[in-house]
Length: 354
Image 1 (tube, rainbow, N blue to C red):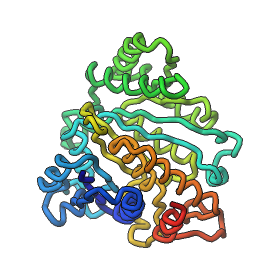
Image 2 (cartoon, rainbow, N blue to C red):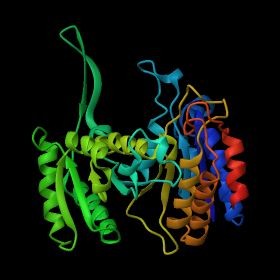
Image 3 (spheres, rainbow, N blue to C red):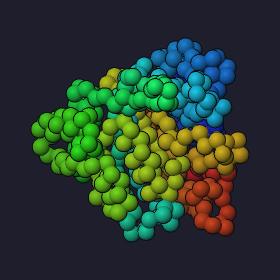
């Protein structure tokens, strides 16, 4: 069984290497094959998502992804490294991004919120990832009577909303049976359609409680009362923003893993893409100080969902928890003046805990 390892750019290379060390320790029986994506792929192949990488992903059981993005390609007209992740989502119809947000015991003081607001924090953001503003057309920059202008198109179709809503309701059935659907129906036509469709799908899940919340209110409630949430369901752009905000409840963007699935499912597990949500962080790339927790926990999700190996997933998660409990911290998690570990040293501690 092959796992496609796609480190990408910036700290994606460093944290993916850490996750791969841990994954190899619990599943040495797998074939781990590397592929180029993002800015690194543009430099080597002229494309952010080369044909060779796509071929690797097609024959793999899952994808362990780092991050893509490079300031060298920020100029207008430059190829975009980010097209790699968007391309993978489209190619494999990976429409459902699952981002679990759980408080890691010992990191209560790493968040900017009071510890009592975070006690027993356990929510999941379910984000639609193949439509909306990121994929709608037209999408372009142009001149409007000599004035620079740009347009992005947000579009949603009923089937796209129905299938992501079912993912959220099915997940809620296994948890605390509450879904908060986030939209902006007081302004956006796409949100009015979103709310109507979510209400219709909810008729199939009477045992699950459904509430609707405007995105600005949801952002405020995440800071005011995060424990009120169970499953947050939302479209592409809102989900991108809210899940980053939710990550900071745990103390750092570097703590939050994610899994993205499509409709396809093998008999022995789900094909998916697993990645930390932290991005490439070019300001610290190459310094060896990036937080690898999210990447390592993404490897745990890969074990659980694509390998159907709950034992390996639990071993990884327990090793991270023990490492934190022992007092180990990366720089982003350490309090002012407290000692911290680099990426490799922190991973060494996780390996020891295994």
